[in-house]
Length: 76
Image (cartoon, rainbow, N blue to C red; front, side, top):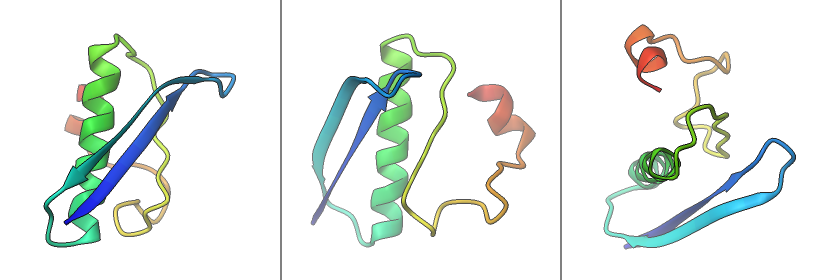
């Protein structure tokens, strides 16, 4: 059992929407990925098409700070 949450802010840093939820996950890595998925789905639901994702998880972040997956980049 665990929990996760996130915030969506505008380009000036002002709060738009936030979320938090309980999760039944095996580890923190899984919780971080579910939080990312929830945040992306929420952004899409409120018609935010351009966004910058930030995370405090060092497990999920690429070491060079970029995503090197063309299919992912085209889909977001």
